[in-house]
Amino acid sequence: MTLNGYLSTDLHIKSPAKEFFQTCIEIMDLPKDKVTVEIEAVPLEKKKTTFRIEGFLISEWYNSFKGTITPEMAKWQNPDEYKKLEGTMTITHVEDNDRDRAILTLKYEKLNSDTKDPGTIMDTFVEFFKEMDEYLVETFN
Image (spheres, rainbow, N blue to C red):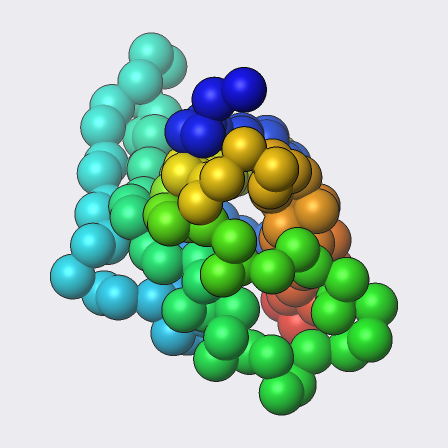
């Protein structure tokens, strides 16, 4: 059994991509020095904007959030079981497209082979982002 790995998931977000990304950075208190925004032209004179943050420490975010999470969210695996638990979030928006895309990737290194892959952590992140997206849709409509 390998100790290193990646988990990745793809989400479609309904809220404005820029607001979704900014909210992620603010709520999760992510390091702004690791944020990139890239704007490029795509066919038919549309613009594609990619928001990306790399290498944020999930264990630090989890530990800072511990006191305020609901009991349902508390079913996380213990992040202390991992030597490395880093996340990358990429959000892509194309003009005149009503569905933006967010990709979350977790890079991990387990302390030992008895530790399960951090699937529960990924599931909790997905649920968190879906709820945040719903809140932002209500806010911007």
